Length: 155
Length: 294
Image (cartoon, rainbow over all chains, first blue to last red; front, top):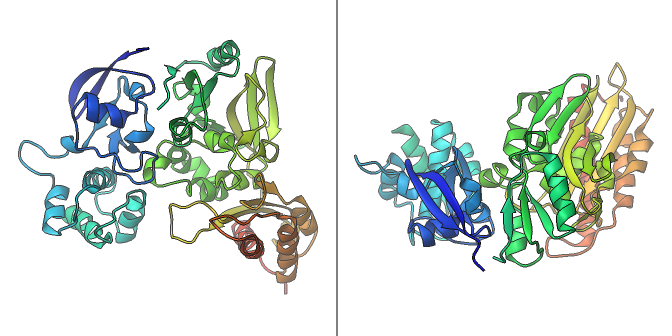
């Protein structure tokens, strides 16, 4: 039985409206209703950080947010990180440092890194490592990711 | 995920009416970091999910020096840990709350949810117990207050009766010469579930050389977070010495009834109880401005 709710929200700076069922996660709606495929589904239980988004300035796992919860809120996804002028410094530094291999976790790391640099533009390595503890990467061993975030903070 | 209806009421009264109307077929949503996972996995079922994050009483954190701290049950861990009064007066509470998940989880998860989820290994609960925190419960028959150590009754089960809501948690005002600490053992640096957790609080005499009272609580060594009351009672009136601290830790250890599971053996957990209680006490004594008597 369909029980759809009409949601008006702001995603990546633009007003967006959609219909969703109350049990649908924000992750599911981003990918399957809105076609924003940059946000990845990893564990779907809040452990891996692949589905990271920024919700009203705060980093969150979109798999653990119901889509109905974002009525009237503001969401940033990986698609909202680059500007018309080009890549965000974090994205550029991920390329320069080869901070990815398979790339699946990368959107989540970049969104997490942006949330960090937005509130702490000059983090210590320890702060970067602690901040990224909620993101899993099975390829890089994390060092290159940490270096990319530190380097992006400098630039 | 199984389908359900969603509602975000603006008052606790509306929640109580909805809970009564649904007669057990409704669940309370705060950060969703436990609930949504459990709904997705079919471990819990509900026809209605009630989001309580739009109710000021359930999200506010208020402090005054006489009445202490009141934490709305749905206030996020991040809001609690970044609150200046909580940091200044309740660092032992921050020790526990800050350990719940990474940044993403801290931004969403609530201490009320940590309590209601009633995990034996919940990091916030031993810290709340040693602070003598109480649960403010509201329901169809009015309000009641329950000490935190009585709130969890079995793994995943809490003391809420049908139709009741955990509205907030009260932590008493800080006293002179009070200090508290919580720590846990995990095999990694962060993002794990406690193998054992230990909290301690002390009130010392004016000179900081004698215990006026103490409370010790353990996590992940019993079906519920455990107040080791005998261990705290032992310290009352005793001098602050290495021997007395070790004896209190030994008493707390003897009260633990751990099991062997994938996170650790019962034997390892027993060992950790003594080590962690000793360390929790030492830090609590330091925060209370105490000093060892030779």
